[in-house]
Image 1 (tube, helix red, strand yellow):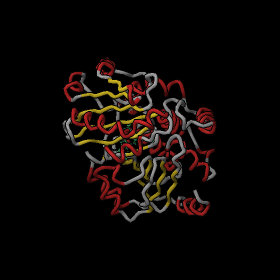
Image 2 (spheres, rainbow, N blue to C red):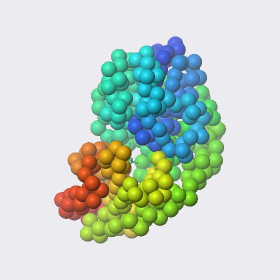
Image 3 (spheres, rainbow, N blue to C red):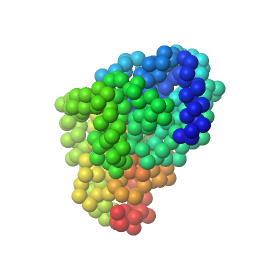
Image 4 (cartoon, protein in one colour):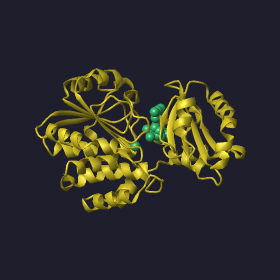
Length: 339
Ligand code: 5GP
Ligand code: MN
């Protein structure tokens, strides 16, 4: 962040303000971790602050400190509209374009509050007065730690803040294994443990609370796994019927696409999940090396994200979506074989 921006924000936060903190739609560990972490930091200065999420998130995140205070726009629309319209400052975290908040987009874009974006996705839009964007960062949680550091305030990181930021760094780095994990990430993680993040308990709370149905659904995903050796590509499909059979809950397919990517020689992996309610196929893409799934998703599946992890959607049927995916691959054959 620019020095001038930091001193402006410091001055802004000197006196209590009405603040709303917003993650993206279908928030993940980094979105909830970063918004709640910042929320706890701002509470420490007696700001009138709340987190407004576009919609609900998986059960495995529902233990985080003050998680129960998060408002959900889709079910508490009026309250949320009032809070957003009255806000003096709106922080938008872990997304790069206001349309990533779904139905909140119009009220957010109409609000005349000061907006501050903290995010690590590619091609950020220019809607905020203050933008802290760094696509090289492992996670928005790592950036919130840096943001607090820019304000010379890491001494105010308590156990609640440390726990929330730990969650987002851990989930967005695949437990510290992705390329975005740097020695600095580990230094921050070490400091968060020193400040009270109970690392073993956090791993357990996020990863070891599987339901029997979730594991059965994983079994179904793995038996649907298809490999296209010609393109070093693998993909998984899940139909609405299959999801219903295993009583699918939000978050149950989180991480499943990584099994496809873990196959030897595979550099590009996809999962296509039918959502009959929204009438879309949710697409999740992962890659290894320089093959950009962000570009692939922007071009073909109306989405985006990072070089090695992106999402998008398709309005075709499940089988048509797969056909479309397979028909696109020949134009990437050279790249996919050079990774
Ligand atoms: P996932 O596949 O886990 O849903 O998302 C992978 C990454 O892509 C995340 O960083 C997520 O924020 C981003 N992403 C997921 N879906 C979309 C989408 O529809 N549009 C954009 N722009 N990014 C997405
Ligand atoms: Mn993130």
